Length: 185
Image (cartoon, rainbow, N blue to C red):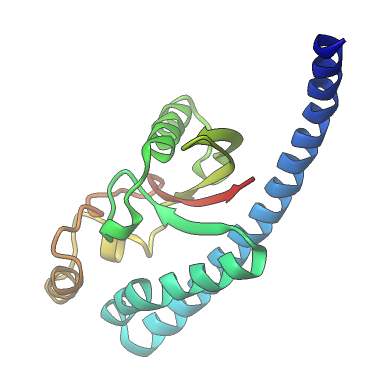
């Protein structure tokens, strides 16, 4: 009897977990869109007001507060990461690294960077977590601070704020990094 009850409970809980992941995915996509739009708006304003050096300040000081605000609003943890980080606080964990490497493979097989996303439920420290990650493509304007030909005044500002910067050398269309979302269950 106990074995039958366990099987029934396991079968019944699976659709609930799938529904939870679907709801998480929808909410995560909304949060990512909000993060992307808000950050882009601040970056465009900064570029118009003070050029790339001002935009670097936005990434350094405003982006973390946007992530913090949206994390609280959506009751999840949202941020950015990359295989080549600028800010060491954004260093990818093993799941993010593995997924970003899979994104690189999928890109090499012809998938568009802007369509690369992945989500799943994982066990981390004996706790279930729902995770989502969405690739950030390198656009033309990104190359100003993340490309191979960075102006000296921009490089000086990057060196001041990010002495261990790895986030350069990108080309148009590369996977610059990713938005990453998680929620513990």
